[in-house]
Image 1 (cartoon, rainbow, N blue to C red):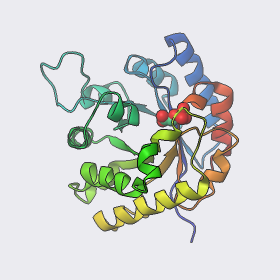
Image 2 (image 1 turned 180 degrees about the vertical axis):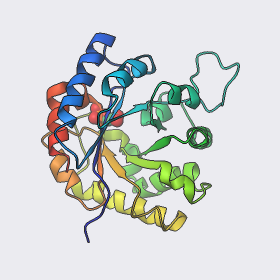
Image 3 (image 1 turned 120 degrees about the vertical axis):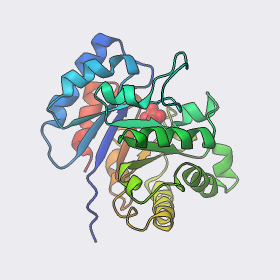
Length: 253
Ligand code: PGA
């Protein structure tokens, strides 16, 4: 049976682009997204560019998100940014637990669980990133690792909270390397994730969007998204150029 999940193509700009470049790219993405009503497009600029990009995409189908948020609500946390401030800036999504934050910045599962709660406190959407390292995959532990990450961040949620959750499966070895998971391997992991969601909240399993990320490009996106449980893509490198991201939007169905 065909699922009812709207495809979602998300661009994670990471720590790239000047304000002028971000502005031009956001305008181009807005134009590319305007051609379709059957798919969603989401941009994750840096914090400093959020308000500017929010002004550009206002009134369009393009959704806006932040790449991270503080685990704290407010107060004396120099250099941090609260979920409430992100909401203020006009964003509806926050990316939580991207592999670069888990591995480079050593963010733990427990810390990420707290961040999920901060996002939900504000009524925003949390997109939780999960994914195994190459070593974990080669030693046959990929599924265990991914499902443990999922449980650690989300198993405490109430049924209602699940309406505010999306998942991005991003194998660490595929991010920025040009090596993507095969559609079959990605589908197997997405199916395992959906099965685990069903155990946590049966109602959420058919509706929660699970995106694949890791070297998604115009030449591999269609085969990945043709799989039953792959509902979209979280794109790094190929989201930084209007041409390749527009092509991804076109192919994302
Ligand atoms: P990539 O990054 O598309 O450059 O591999 C994906 C991501 O880190 O979200």
